[in-house]
Image (cartoon, rainbow, N blue to C red; front, top):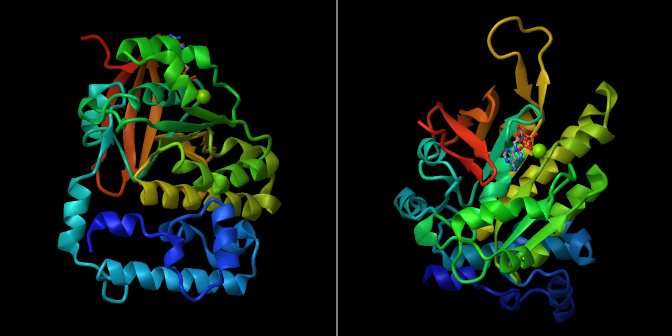
Length: 329
Ligand SMILES: Nc1ncnc2c1ncn2[C@@H]1O[C@H](COP(=O)(O)OP(=O)(O)O)[C@@H](O)[C@H]1O
Ligand SMILES: [Mg+2]
């Protein structure tokens, strides 16, 4: 069975559940077998509105059908096959050739890239640049395979659509059409943000979403949960959000970008005195962690702090009216 057919396996293929259950899945926006695998049965039960027992049945059968089609042996597949898939990875042009180069081509599709740094280091400007380059055709470093959409979860409330105009102009993107395909979420609190991320699966296919940005992932959890006593709750929320995002971007071959704040480390007197927040749950759950810092004027340094497939590296970018670019020589 070809990859295509597995990709499009519908929940109608389920045999052990009632048509009422399938109806509920569809109403929840879950049309494909791979959609239900994004959720733990407990979450799935919540989202679709049936019992956990039913959700377990659905997930169990979905796994079985997909594995049979993929000809996996107890869920395992050959590394040689994965090698081919990973070689076909798409990259999104960042706006800076320097940055593309250290990232092995740009922000990788199917992965979450984190941009961490202090205030005004260019995290949002990097996101806005990606929102323009995404509309470029694939052969020009974009993600556009016909008609694509972008989701921006703007939890810091800093996004102003007119900021994109000069960036669109630089890349020759038609602003009106593009703005129509950018879907902006403005969560009011951390719970709202988590809910928004969990509901994304319902809008991804319809709008062919190829880029999801959360700017910032950690601001609201940090604001809503203060003090040591609430650390556990805060981390649980961050984990839930980053895990959902990862599964979405992996399942739909989407570029995932999240921004993150930093904290000072009061007990460190040498080396880097600040570090990204979010603790281990975030550090272990993004594919590539970038650290932005101020150099001078509009020049910023970007460093790969940690990546599952890239060596540590560092380069410089410039923030301009037309988005991030390489510094002038
Ligand atoms: N239109 C613009 N033209 C040139 N530089 C800009 C423009 N807008 C913002 N910047 C620069 O970007 C920096 C802020 O970057 P930003 O991405 O908002 O930071 P943060 O990391 O806090 O998200 C500021 O130094 C600002 O001068
Ligand atoms: Mg910002």
